[in-house]
Length: 344
Ligand code: SAM
Ligand code: FES
Image (cartoon, rainbow, N blue to C red; front, side, top):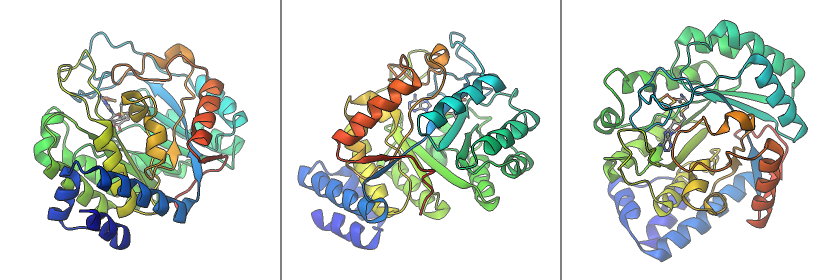
């Protein structure tokens, strides 16, 4: 079975049968070799560098009703907020001083964030901080909107595809959310010249190994610059409140597989990974991850961006999060760099 890891390391691909075997095995020697090879692959491309992305959670309003998500519109108890232009600029100022060179504005699909609101804001941020990259993660929008946002200066867009298999996608989302549209958005973003991030949750309800293989194949077709995966974690006020969450072990295994399939991709050690295990992000870094996304949102709103239960880092100031992560990353044997961190 370790031969499959070596094959993946050398060729960056496996057949479906081989992937199935690798994902299904509980052999510790396989996980250990996968971790080692994933770390070698990341060091060949990115040495020990870890890129920081300053995450600004701009809104907890959302018109969508994804069954897994704590801020879905159908959750009447979700506390709603949106940041003002001034709030967002303050987050960037604070982040720049702390050494961040990428700002990620993420939020629910909130109609308040029109192109007319966002474009001048993006242009202003780029003028103030020309050495920084701007990433948006605001869900599905029209081609025209993506085009205007790109022209205003946006560099990157994160839109997890969530599930490439129709069967699973329709169990995780209501009927008005269309998988083909999500995929179309991702290809449009690429066509417009964005650096694109896709991804999925590990251990989502109803997810099988076949679904995961479909996700890996979709990623091979899309060739995104970033791949974000993290464990599914139930939220108490969603239809999936009683479901089991994704495991640390499977998430780490998939991170290792992704690093070997996509040796140069940007791979974040996500907050959800740090939520299922206190050393989850460190283990992620040791299994091929090269990005972390500390929170820059004002502490006042942190708890309201409540995607899943027990989310970490909701009480600390941005500077505390930055320092905490710096220590964790160094202790894990890696080096935080103050760079934009583009995909090579
Ligand atoms: N609205 C934007 C979008 O749809 O891409 C960005 C915000 S959305 C909350 C960001 C990501 O959070 C989703 O892509 C999803 O994978 C993840 N997420 C939502 N609920 C989650 C849960 N219960 N456990 C783990 N991750 C979750
Ligand atoms: Fe819209 Fe989760 S349902 S961000």
